[in-house]
Amino acid sequence: MMSKTLWSEGVRYQAEHMPERTGSGEFISDLTRRDQVFSFLKPPFNPKVDVKNGMLLYVEGVSVSFDGFKAINDLNLYIKEGELRCIIGPNGAGKTTMMDIITGKTRPDKGDVWLGQQLNLLNMDEAQIANAGIGRKFQKPTVFEALSVWENLELAMAGNKGTWYLFRAVLSSDQKCDIMRVLELIGLETHYKMQAGKLSHGQKQWLEIGMLLMQKPRLLLVDEPVAGMTHQEMDRTSELLLSLAGEHSIMVVEHDMDFVRSIASTVTVLHQGHVLAEGKMKDIQDDPRVREVYLGQ
Ligand SMILES: Nc1ncnc2c1ncn2[C@@H]1O[C@H](COP(=O)(O)OP(=O)(O)OP(=O)(O)O)[C@@H](O)[C@H]1O
Ligand SMILES: [Mg+2]
Image (cartoon, rainbow, N blue to C red; front, top):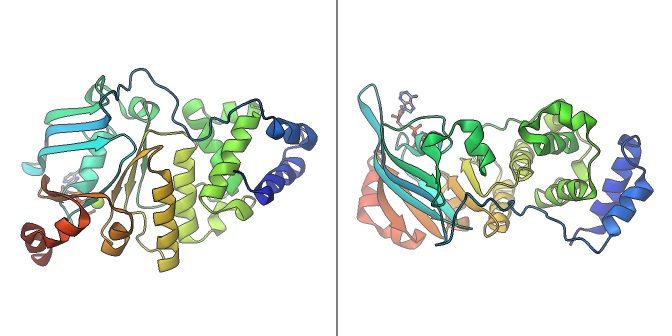
């Protein structure tokens, strides 16, 4: 349920900042309609993403070398629909390179990468892969600092339709509702007017996750989300990611073991571009091969 505060903030925002788009009265009546189900956050149905057997991402036998160095070496990894998976591993294990391959930034020398059973990601470019429902959050926040929090989310919703679409568009009630629900999820509902550049580091990270959510991805790839965060911000981030799982599949790369423990169901350990171990966090911690890799650092 949308909180009353957020609702009225949104109405006030509309009245103050976007009177040309729609009057606040119309906005309220849009939102109070009960005959429509908000499409909030649900990834749109894409018949090409075939997840009949519950598996969303397949990475099979993937290898890539850089100047003869095997950064990824016969990697096999499967992510179920709605799963929250943590990827850990020492520096240089190939975690970021794996994300580069899934998002089409790096082409593997060998192997297969599929989204569902029908979409071969290796035949698609980065934009097509993003459109198919894979969103990626890099370690450094990349929000538009001069724009407000609300405007950042609005811009993200336009996606690759471009800013021209955004300036011409009158937001539908569903779209406004999506923005407000995302604001609430990322805990920035009282900061919607604030310039993104003035947010704390943690808040910027949440805003960027919110921007990804505006595109309703099926799979979210998140690289080191809590680096540089305070403990409190880390707790908020684990709550946020846990609340997104189920509706989305999420792959989180993280070095902070307390954080991993707080969210992990299944953990995959990468080492030298290969899966060294996979399982529950407790078993992973007790695995002598994993201990050796970490102690050897
Ligand atoms: N474009 C590239 N050209 C050459 N070498 C690369 C390239 N990208 C990655 N590498 C190398 O591949 C290996 C894996 O790097 P990667 O960044 O994927 O590791 P990581 O697991 O993300 O490490 P970290 O925990 O430090 O972020 C490293 O040895 C890195 O130097
Ligand atoms: Mg990395």
